[in-house]
Length: 131
Image (cartoon, rainbow, N blue to C red; front, side):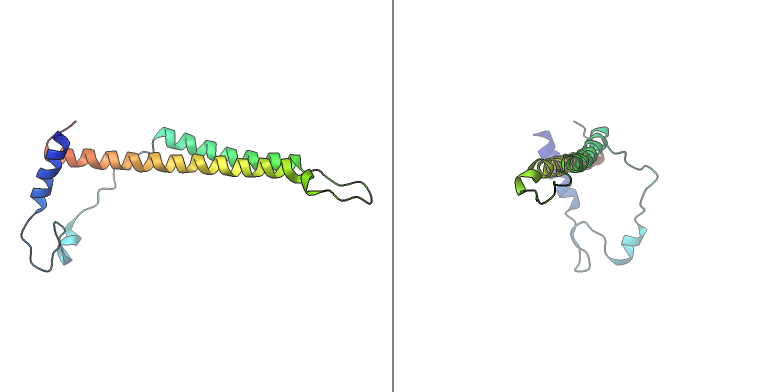
């Protein structure tokens, strides 16, 4: 409940009377150039995100390697492989791609959640409240 009250207070701070050249709380024109970007403190990527990206890359690489190893090879003379012979190779390939993609998606979601948490804590710091 304190967070909601703090955000309401923050919203009231932003409500300033502006003319048509400014939008709500955002400076217009030349005033925007005065805002300094502080890039001296680069935000570290959470270690779980790095681990999930690594596992995702290894899953895709493993799927490709197992696909290549599972290929049936050269058929005997006067014979062609049926589609069923390629099923294990394609299964390894698609399972590697799918699991790697899921790991990448999970790491992206955790990265976004970390950015949201960082933004909320900065807002609460500006308001003088911390939870």
